[in-house]
Length: 488
Image (tube, rainbow, N blue to C red; front, side, top):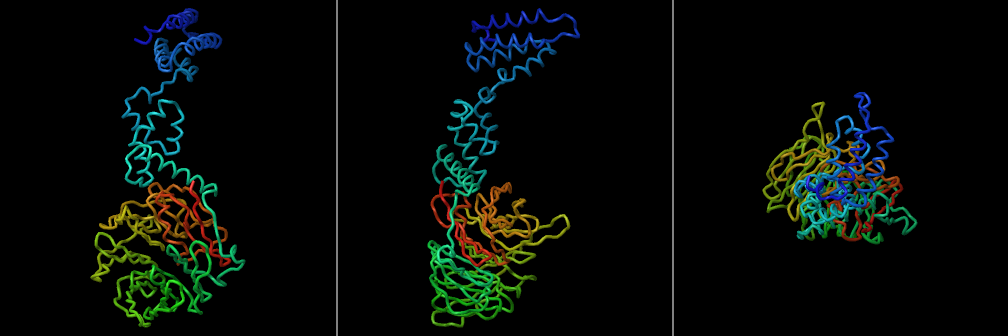
C-alpha cells in the first residue's frame, strides 16, 4: 500500500503487531489475542496514529493492518477497534454516488449530517440537486432561483416552522370572546366562510354575522333569517344556504339583501359564488345555477344539473386552461360538469376497499401548481384520494392515521393536507401520509357542513412568508377563533 510505504510510523506499528503475533499461543484452540495483550497494543497504537496520521491515513492503515490478521483474530480486533477503524465511505466514494446515498435520508437527518465533518458540510452545501430533491419530496415550490442555498433555505424554513407549530410557538390566536366578553352565536354554528377581508358565520340561532378578518370586529348582522346550513362568498356578494331549501344573497357587509333563491326541495349543503352567478348543492340530488340580476330580488334559476343518486354535500368550481368546470361531490361519486355548455363530462368513484365498497366524505379541493390546477383531492372511506384533474386518473391514495371517516378534509396544499381530528387541526404529509402535527383547538365543534376557512392553502404549500390568519374555527361555546401564523 502506497500510504503505508510513505509513513515513518508504519514500521513501529507493524513491529507492535508482530510482537503480539509471536506471543500468541501456538495452541490452535487458544489462537487469539488476550484482553491484556490487546489493550496494550491498542494503547500504543492510539498514541502513534492519533498524533502522526491524518484521518484518511489512519483509516487506510488500520484497514491494511486488520487485513494482515488471521481470521480468528481479525473478528476480535475489528470489534474492539470500531472507533478508529471505521471508514467514512462518503469521503471514499465518488461524489455522485455519495449524493445518491445521502438524498434518501429524511430532511431532519440531512441537516444533522451538515455537522458530521467539514467534508460532509462542504459536500452537502454545494449540491443543488440534493436540496432540490428535498423540496420536491415535500412538494415545496422554491420559486425561480436555482441556487443550492435558496433550495436549502426554503426547506430549512419549512422544517423550522413545522417544529414551531408543534411547540405552539408558531401561531397566536384571537377570538370574539376575548375582544368583547360575549359569545356571538347562541346555537350551533353550522356555516363559516371567509374572504381576504371578511369572515362570515351563521347557525341554527337564525343569525348571520360578518366580521373583520383581522380584528374580528363585528361589521354587519341582518335581521333574523332561516336556520343557516352553509355560506359562500366572493368579493361582490355573500350567499347563505338554509335548511328549508332557500338561499339568501347579501352584499359583502350583510347590510343589503340582494335576492332570494327558492327552488331546492331539500336542505342546501353548499353554495359557491362565481362573479354574478351562484351555484348550489342540495339533498334533493341536484346542483343548481342561479343568475343575479341588479334590482331583481327573485333570483333567476338558470340551469339544473341532475344525475346524482345521493345527496350532494360539496361543490367545487375550477377555471383552468380556458375550461370552467363544476365538481359536485355526493356520497358515491363525483360528477364533473362543463360550466359553460352545461354538459356532463365525467363521473369519478372512490374505488373499492377490502369489503368491496367505499364512499366519499365531505371535502373536495383543487390543488394548484403555479396558476394551473393539477390535482383533485377528496376524502373517502379508503383514505385521501388524489386524481389528475384533467384526465381524472387516480394518482394515489394517501393513508394516514390522522384521517378516518369521522374526520373531514378541510384544506389542501402541495406540502400538507389539513384534516379535522378529535383534538383540532391535523396536518399530514401529502405524499407519505405521515402525521406532522396537530394544532389543538379546545372544545371545537365539528359538523358535516364544515367550519374551516378553505383559503388556508398558501401555508399548506410550505410557503411561510408573513403573519396572516391561517384558519378560523368555531368552538362549542359559539366563539369565533382565528389562528395567526408566526413566521420563524
